[in-house]
Image 1 (tube, rainbow, N blue to C red):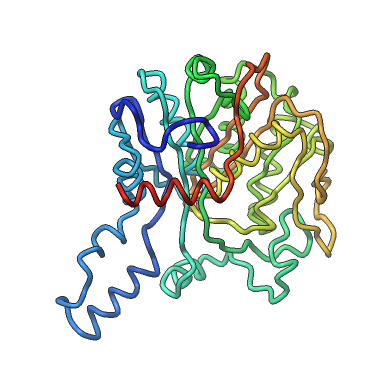
Image 2: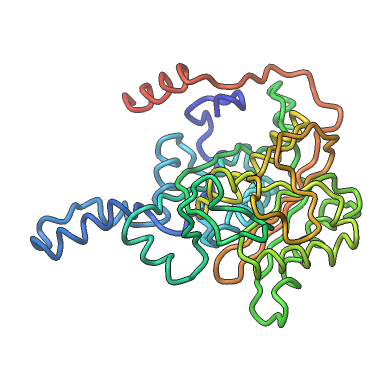
Length: 345
């Protein structure tokens, strides 16, 4: 909010909205309370269990803290949730909202959560932390779970210009699909990519780079590349691809939101972030960027897939004729001061 030049509390509560992407609530907190239930009894379970375990708690807390009392919601589509989240945000803005706070995050590193993930067979069990998560590599063994969150502020351009606030990028188009019923799951992702480009009013050939989902299993990576090639053809061999989450890990419902943020910042800085270096070599012809790469970035595609068949694609574009603005990045000190003031309130 500070980076967007907005106050910490909405001046018009019913013109601000919150959309969060989440698959679960506080796993570690919830596990501790369940242990108390079985070990001691129900009277020792915290009253906050009902909220802390609830995946929509983030939306509620942000709504209360920032007095965002317009339409609010939560999207549960695992790692693809952030794409559906921006779709909801666009609908709210089209309906007259001034500001939408879009956030996605997960805290899934706990014995209970890991027990749920491990049977899927998609987590890397490599002991080499520097090369545990290697998308599109012959040595790929799966992805690494991470905890974290990313938050964006979305508003109509006319509103941002009126306030004298700049933007990192424009959300030009997005689409989500579901793989159920598709004989080839790559068709569902290909459809999402084509629909996102269509909504953006552009030809897929105008894409300058791709933030890939990069699940780092042979089957999933093949499916993703097949989906991209169905839309881009042979250009898939040359278009720059990056998977910055391979360095940080996949943070559940925060995955797509972080990629959207990374894509916007890449366009703003004209530099693509790096991906993990594959020690075993890439398994396919992929122009994977493993170092920060200065690039001409006008239109960037973000692909995201969630466990269970969810697919999302979004086109993030450069701001044309950017207005003169006073945007300034937030620093840790003011951020702490803002938080302390909110806590006092």
